[in-house]
Length: 153
Image (cartoon, rainbow, N blue to C red; front, side, top):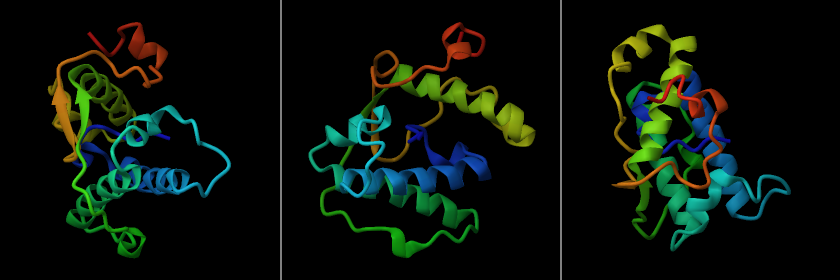
């Protein structure tokens, strides 16, 4: 499960569809509707928010909006309203890590998209995240090649 901190506009088609499905799974987990994934590290920041369900629903809304802008037909009926406009902080280190991580994926899956973004050091965050200075988030499971600096400088 990967719930990107970066704005969904950077994702390729495969990544955007995967994000939609994984965020829906995350919501199901937060609602207590699964046996697995309950302690998945990607859920930590949502669990720590004032309202985890509002947070994941706001997250899903931005993914849906990006899909709509691209002409994809995600099921709007799967969105749930949220009553509290939740924001969550994300560190600059996390955004830089995710930028490098996604660029590596794009390099293998979508060269055109990779070429468009390869010069960007840090992608903009998902609309619900507020950027603060800091290292990679403690809950992140860092990909070993990225840790060794093959992508991260």
